[in-house]
Image (cartoon, rainbow over all chains, first blue to last red; front, side):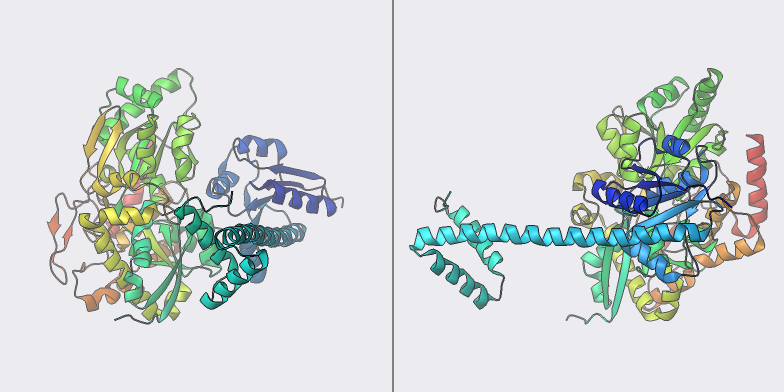
Length: 200
Length: 414
């Protein structure tokens, strides 16, 4: 039996994540992949694409609209329902945890869909991890910038060396059991309120 | 004296005003005073709430009244048995149409008085005029197929001789996008909770033509849906939570607290809209568009008129509408599922220690109370109704078969 290639539609407002999913699908040999970021006019697109599988990000506020349309719209020739493997509660939870779900046309065999959902789940998780790490790096950079400004204020207003200014910030943070970035932020804010002591 | 939280409870909600009783229970200390550590999670769709209840992320959630029925009747892909021990209020919705549709309705006799019969008659005349001219059917939006909005919109249209399955199109649009979809012409009208009707009026792109409180006075809207497995295993936590919700609802109803409630809901993590936008639902004073204004009695009740009591007759009315519009087959098994979904017994046993007024019955004949009526109930001072349907129909939950048959023949005539 020759299997026809599955048409896969990815609906994700996050372009980067959508691109990562698309790449994963192509690596797995799926060639008929379409990505949509904006659901405006989606009924017409579905009529054109006739997807077998739809991968959707669960944070999409249009999910109720999409579910209803998959079931009822005249554009949808065969009803499309959420893919739920009732024998595998863990995989259902993994998908919801990851924030992704697959919808499949009526009658499509489970073993053809499962690998697609599994891939999407692992890539969604990888993306979240990446976004989290990026956020941490960004926070760290931000805090380093604030510390530099706080050091500058101390150097100017108290005539300290850069090293002494840093030591003072660190000691204060330790004494108050707070992060050095928080102490620096307080100092910068206070200096801003108190007037022209700002060093820029 | 501070109590140590004995119960950890996790709840989901949608950023809609009628989550207020749940939000206030968490934010203003009502839950903590009952020994509940309530964690609230804001969600982006009803489907997410359904999924997270099903896999146990949430113990309970703010839900559309018919949603737990849909779960238990197997109408949703992921479902766990969900029960309703508490209702979050009565009313709160409106039907809003575009300026073009309103102009067409006015040409057929509509007036800015929110009268459902007059509005429906003029809309029907407009629809037939459009059909005769070969125009596309009007497109209305609701928030979810299994929603009070969908069923009351259809009930209103059908009672006015409009077949909602053939003469208009009904689509799903998330509440915050309704006004925008109306302004850009993607839809011609919608039924949604406040403030998304007043939003279109304020933008000058819509007219409120009637309200839920006029279609079916004091009718059910959102509820607390609880994972039955959790409820069975944690009866004390559930009872404590219901008492917290009761105190919260009483506080939310008091006009003296409306300013503070609106400020809580205005926070970004909850509704995230300015307090002024929330006042119409709290006061019942609505601007209708084009300069018209109206104050609607019982527009939205978070507490009064036994608003929190999970009447089985409310669940059963939703069930009749699910049958009516082909969402579910009317069978003895399905009827039994619908009958068991709302749990006034749990509400009553949780609140009994408080000595507050409680309805004596689990069901009532909907539409029987023509005026506000003090009822013989445990405790004192319980007033119910009026609870009339605008078309004068009565729903007797003991006569379900006859009611469903009556709906079918009405539809055949339409």
